[in-house]
Image 1 (spheres, rainbow, N blue to C red):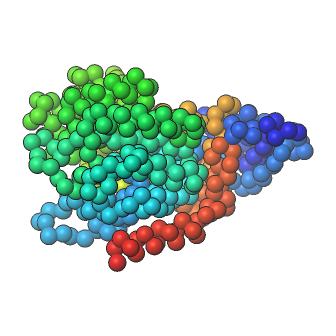
Image 2 (image 1 turned 30 degrees about the vertical axis):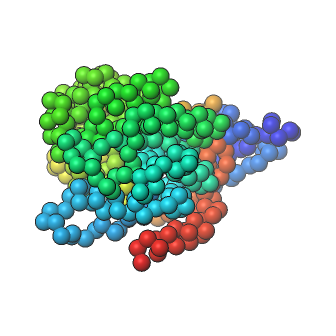
Image 3 (image 1 turned 90 degrees about the vertical axis):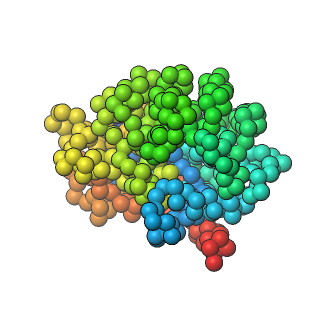
Length: 470
């Protein structure tokens, strides 16, 4: 059998296919890392395959998609959990501490921090990430010889770990409406033409390996870019068929400032200016009205929730029930990396609403199906995320990339689960220890719960932390 004809066989106990757990089924992938098909496991003769992987007592599921990440913020985990001199700590006081950390990082540091964050994602079953990247310049605000140097260091880190990455290059113009320049933001700022030229260069540079890495446009927020700038980025993204991501209505102060500047809320501004469409992802979208939800639904846009970060920063609770009722796709992101666990983010969509409404199963449809709520939340972590970042994947089906992970059926967190409630056990109860194998493009990147370069990545990150904080 020639190398280009070689096929690989994966034999788990169960496979999650289009919302159902199937038994006695094997997955077949080709040498290029694409799923060829599913086969009857009992009838397969293993000698016809280049490799055979026996995944005994494991369930195979499509890889998770982390649609919103700031990888460098992994360096501040646990370092902002104290009361500052401000009478009220908030998102805004946290932001200044985050900016201070961002200004300490050189290109090697960006790589080390990103590699650590991405490896942790891989250990949790994440196979693709949307990286909302906004550090572009030197600490004193000068351009590198390659203005995309830092973006490429992030992409390199993802590739070295083994993840696919959408590098969502951020447009940042100002500190805010009628605000004085913030010197801590000097690494982020670019005028409209500079930003578009640099995004075009990055888009072209990544095309050589576009199956593994690609670009997207990301105007930071309505407070960080003017309307003319925002519209220019939208036109470019639509012309180049790029995904476009933007922080929207994360904080009440952002909504108030937008109304002061434009006479409209952030969603109303995006809607009336024709900026919402099926390639647009509104990140957070917490402080909005039912009318705004209807506008997002009509446009075909996606919403990205980041519940572990949103609770950490005190942002508020995303109205996931309103989005679900309006058929707005919700995807998930780890955002500030305070915790990297998309299953935790998925279950918090539901749990936060339970606390607010003092009810259970808020996001479940009105049918008696034990797996429907879990399936809905799992879709947020897979197919909805893939849609958001412009990736055709996150499904177990012929022609899809062979990106998947396995869960140990004997792990203490889900042991004893029946087939009928297995997905609910995974979504609501699984812990890190249960995730054993992660495969991207047919290549194992996590084997029995460990990455090939785990020790080296951790040691390099520990050295970075010592230099930054000691």
